Length: 165
Image 1 (cartoon, rainbow, N blue to C red):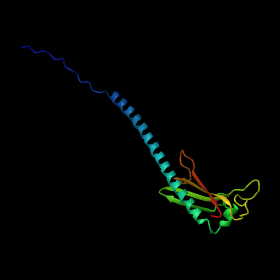
Image 2 (spheres, rainbow, N blue to C red):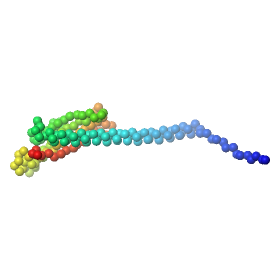
Image 3 (spheres, rainbow, N blue to C red):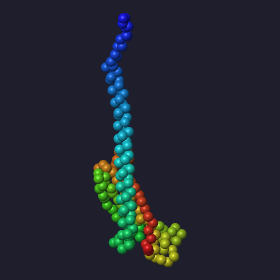
Image 4 (tube, one colour):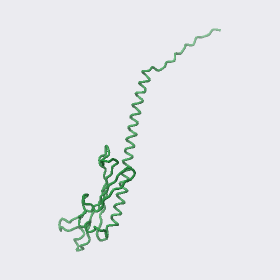
């Protein structure tokens, strides 16, 4: 019996340079993936803060519509005195989680340019003003009021209200 010679396979190991190159490539890939995940988390946080701001604004709008008849400064609201953020009808702050929400509730009268009177009072009903109730909500998660990459975040909701229900 003769033995055939089987060619011996030499096992080839990775060199140190090849291992380092693989580590560099993997590091770059992981950094890219980490960046995508971080952006995704920031976007999710922004969306959830916006949803909380929307819910707060809607709640304040409903509460203000219900509280308007007989309010202490109702006459100022209908006269348009409470129509700016520096002189709002209502103002406040709420902290939800780590997010600070600040809100202003103002009222804007609508004047008929032809008659010079508030809309709704043209037919002789002096107490039938039409106004827009505006709720402005601003929020941030930082002390200076700005979030990196987003600036100052703000949401505005409004509803037309009639003085005589």
